[in-house]
Length: 448
Ligand code: CO
Image (cartoon, rainbow, N blue to C red; front, top):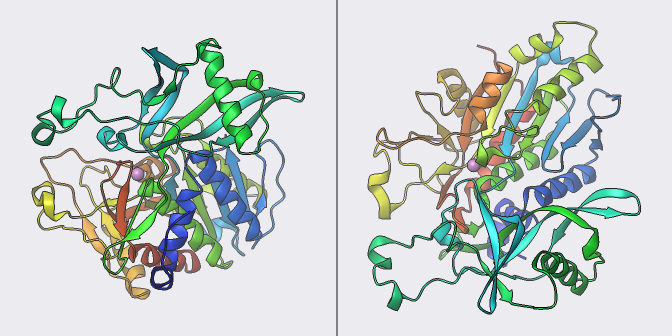
């Protein structure tokens, strides 16, 4: 778990809680399970998409799609058509390495693990890290097929760097790993006893048994497993003013919005958080932000509460979405990579992300509203614009804004090394983001 001094815990309690959340959430499925347990503890009730719902104004609910996308909401005291939805969206997934279906490869006396690349990780940062394995399995037991989360108890794989003696240009040309031949991490020594693919199933079962869990290798049908850096999150800097961990993009935004939702209380409007998988690969899936999950849920809420055919559309026209994803913090070592007039500073507060081509959903009105909310809670606000000569990334904001027709702003806390195995950010920003989101949930949005 996170290594934290008392000083850091006192100065940055929200950042400390975030590091623990990430350490317990190595995969989107684990992050979703973590958030479910926090929602349950806070009195939110589970809903099942396959069942009929019975909803009560003022109460909190949550539902999951396929284990890694989650929507949580607290109904308003008023109907949605009167007061709309105050919504925050974020994503549960992070770029990295995913285990293939026939993963074991033998070379000489060593076994390597075949992996696919998920999203856009900085591949070189996965080298020389003690990589651990986690994800979900589908297993066939007495009751048929079931899914279960797994997390092996210790790091089991590594991508050993080539010594500089054989790679003399590594400090001038950088570390380039061939994606097919050089990326597969080293897993272990060869065992000649089992056919290769049975061996991987047996390895999973054996590792879990050492952790006191039971799993029969023959029962494993399929998996989604990923490798992650096993080093826990921590504070660094003379005053502990920075944090380092994997998956700050975007578990920091998930944690901030969920914390804000739980801290808020019932209002006239309905408060909602949507956490979606598959953002790093384009969001096009049945549970991704480009899928129907959010629209389906909003429609069902309106149908449940109102006998009015235009209620959903009236509600959406009165709604607002904060799309929360991390922002690129200015880095003095690479000053020319940034727009010099829009340097976003770590520990300088949340950044509004602006892109004229609508890679970010922010526009003048949504910018002004978000800036106002920051001012009302005494939090500084920054503005991020990508350089004109670099292609700009995107996130779920434009996707949900287009699908729902809801006014939206893209915001995020500043961070360095986005998509590294070990990312970094400011310790003070997380508490500031939670304060603004909390204010957003607890107050009606001015309609312009
Ligand atoms: Co992101």
